[in-house]
Length: 342
Image (tube, rainbow, N blue to C red; front, side, top):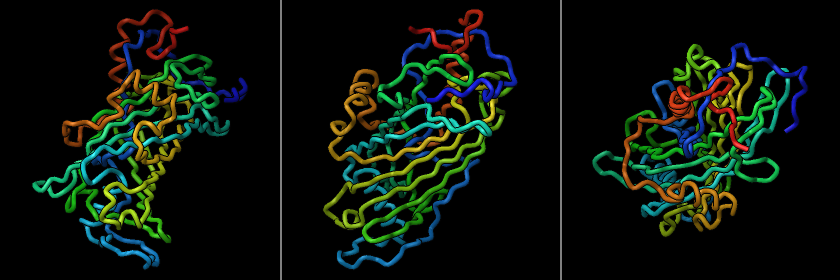
């Protein structure tokens, strides 16, 4: 990343915190990377209106995509496996710092891994989606998973808090609820796309008064933009239980708390694509697979316990927990995520 010139640096309007403690193990985050559940403060675009173009007629249409059950089954085939077997996805991407009137800076590459399985619930009339995921920040030149990052805006090195988001449960209802089926879809030739936009306005657990180094404001806004793309022939083939899928995911949000940017103007832009890996973990990049196998091997398998949606862990509420745990042990001049390693 090119370092901004001193003249272009935007000063924080609040003083830095003065204490810090060492990280104890891997930090859990939670951005909802592979399928964020909607909340009461969310707006979304996932309606019961089909937008299909001319349908290919060179194969049998075994599913009615305008019905709730078949539309949902198509999504399940794309995102998981109807047999209940694990489906693993890998999603490489980029993280950019967008600073108004200054510039756009490619600060990290990212690599995420999500693994899911599904079960149909007759009682609930829908699919239970068992999922966990992680997102690793990597060096944009070497691809190595990074433990620390030199922040050119503050000229301080900070500890990177990767996202380890366990039990990201979702429930896909066939009727009722904000996210019920059928979903919008588009067809072009043999390609089908479900496009979903999720925007949130939520109370920030990291308030400006209590967390001036880690908070932009008492309310935070995020936007997640999804494109779930699959192969129609595979979806319509009754013998295929897990169809090919590529998912585009972008996220617009404030600074990550570990960056210790306070309320400096700017946003983080995340952009990635997830690929269903039918060969499992063997298809992951070697550096990523080695890191996960060593540090968090459970993230190569889906959870076995059902945790009802609604207890969402986010980057913000988990960061609050970490900061609160570290503050009492900080020394003069230290900050919660200030780097103390070599």
